[in-house]
Amino acid sequence: MPLGSARFGLSGADLGKLELIQTQTVTSSTSAVDFTNLGNYNVHFLTSNNFSSTQDAEVLQPFLSNNGGSSFINSGYQFGGQVGDSNGNFSESRSTSSSSMAVLGKSGTGTGEHSGSYAYFYNLLDSSKFSFMTSHQIAFNDQPEAEFRFFSAVLPTAETHNAIRLTGGLGNIATLVVSLYGIAES
Amino acid sequence: MAVGNLEFIKSETISSSVANISITDVFSANYDVYKMTVKAVGLAGGTASRIDGRLINSSGSVISSSNYDRAELTLKAHTTFQELRSVDADTMFDYLAGTDQTPETSGGVVYFFNPFSSSSFTFMTVQGASFLNSEFRGSKSIFVLKTTDSITGVQLISGGGDNLAEGKISVYGLASN
Image (cartoon, rainbow over all chains, first blue to last red):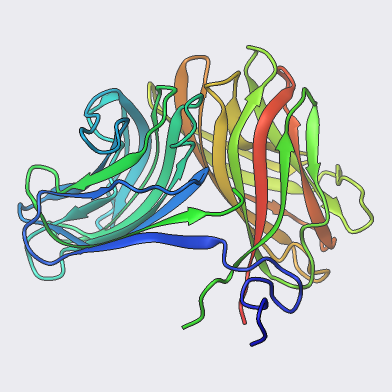
């Protein structure tokens, strides 16, 4: 490939705008996974795969920080979400006073009871805007049954949010592969 | 493994009060699937508004014929969710989650399927999040334009409240080969 065509394709398109910031892998009990370098993007994209908690029926929870990860905010989030499973149970999930920015996964401790998800984060680094998130998740949960969740969430404080933490709910994270990307030009 | 296949096409920034904004000449024969990111669309004043949409054909005309269908779930943090639907509408109502004056704003991601094809309908999926009138809401919705027009752009429209005044819209192609 000629020099220059790695970034600009033959059609002239500007290539490679999903930019990997960092991938972190958990293979043993870990209390939290932190991303403290968010680059310089308006929209971030996060994928989680193979999440499980050390405790049965627990969830993968995201939190934001306004001080680079020295501490994480655990109040004031709002969200609306829909939950459904393969047994036909569908329900609304909502809060105006959540301790986390909704949920990005659900797991059990049985074989295969893991989950995967993706999420978009908006305005995290914009000090004049609220920070938003939208997400979609598939889990084989603790019942065990296939379960989806999709959420929209906000931290309604106009400030810079420059770190993301993921925890395993009331347990630790047992397994997880999580990647954070920035969407350039967004 | 192929890398780098989210390919930037164009951005538009709203920086003054406008009733609508058109993002033109973004869909072509180069891709079948497109992603549009919407960052912090806000209003010029404090009268909350829907953000509606219409598509733009290859002649540059905004399509306002009654051929848009949608199904939408509005996820409100403070109360029961709302199902919204429309058939044979001349506008894609609530294309993005409704918005208000900064810092409340609206953001989201739209995927387009087959917009440029002159033999397929144009499909869209939208996920969004916004704050308006001091209340949070998300949106998960689908839209279709039930014609085989070759689509090259999209228009965002203030749906009844104050004008749009800020925001950034970026369009990307998803390379498939």
